[in-house]
Length: 281
Image (cartoon, rainbow, N blue to C red; front, top):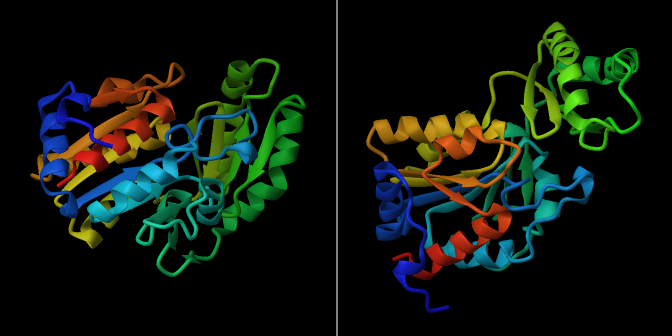
């Protein structure tokens, strides 16, 4: 593709610049980790209609053979992210790993298999109680439940007042979750009830250790990505260079304030991956 180094965006922080330089200098020791929704795929009103950016697989396929690994870390079930991403059987992605349910599930491209623990018993209890809670709280027809198997998500994006519905449901869903041994993870017009002890930070840190990665790039867009940001910051403090990328969003500013580099949504993420693939090594 013939890009020049000048075309790569410059991180706004010294640690971010160091992280990008480390990824480019020794890509074979770098982990590139990415969120799915809002990062590789545009946010859409119906989560079941989400699909990876049309250039995401080509960009990842160009990058993956040059780096230690590419991991997609998502709250979705691993199999769903693989299907919506179009990752299965894609040439160049033989060593892609998808860490689903915040790392509780894992899909390896090399085997095509998903490994997962047994569901938390609280999920079944919440599944049974959640419709009644929503009805009692007066949640309108635009509020919908997404059953992820190991977790349940309540989406308010289609409600008449999405933000109002989101705020009104936070406390009752928190009570429902804690009463059944679960936690609530807020996101962009979504509240997810899931088992505790697993988040994107834990998943990222464990995979960095497993891989022996010497640098890491993480890109995300939502509140659920903050633990991964914290994990990269911890790695940097311990001497492992890292780059924090925010897939820009007007809805969530917490990430953009902490990011080393803000790009223009999935378009910008894919462009960055292509540029790194061009220049790595």
